[in-house]
Every structure is written in C-alpha cells, then in structure tokens.
Image 1 (cartoon, rainbow, N blue to C red):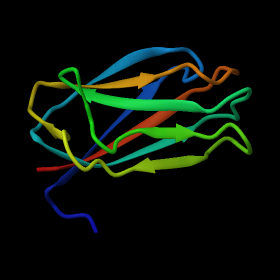
Image 2 (tube, rainbow, N blue to C red):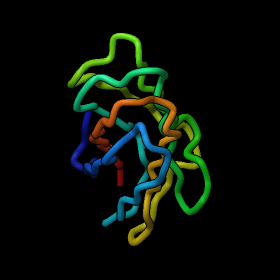
Image 3 (cartoon, rainbow, N blue to C red):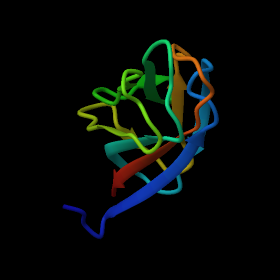
Image 4 (cartoon, one colour):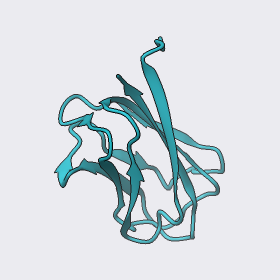
Length: 115
C-alpha cells in the first residue's frame, strides 16, 4: 500500500543489451522500497541483469534479471531492496546493465521512494 510519504522516480535505460550505467538524480531523501522495470521489446541470446548503486554501494536486494526466454514488449519485473537503499537529496542512483542480452531494447525503470 502506498502512503503520502511515497514518491516515484522514473527514468530510462536506452539499451539494456549494451553494458553501461545511467544515473538518476534524487530530488528528496528517503529509502528505495521497490523498483519496477518494463521493456519496450523482446531481448534475445541471454538474460539482461540490472543492478543499482547509491554512491558506489550496491543496493541490497535490488538486482533485477530480465529473462530473455519469452520476453516481450511490456514485460514488468520488480525488486524490493532490503538494505543499502537510503538516498539523500542531491545524490544519484546508478542503474547498471551487464549487456548480457542482444537486440537493442529500451527499459523504463521506476523507483518507489518512501520519505
């Protein structure tokens, strides 16, 4: 259940099939309580692994694997971080993809942050 203390940050990874990082600025302090992803099209060859870091420290329980087998546009995956998930105003959340899949694929990521 969402509370009035929750807010949402949505960003995009241009291509999860290419290894790299994208940064999302944080406008208000809080804890990441859930992460959602949705892909634009199917990926091929292998799964795509996403991880998230705050200030160079991995968000515990925040990893998401986007499964190649049966993937399709609109597939949603989630993670519920358990530790190392506090963010401060003015920090950035790093979204990291391992580039394990092939076929260029945009991925939208939404963070639920509780103040």
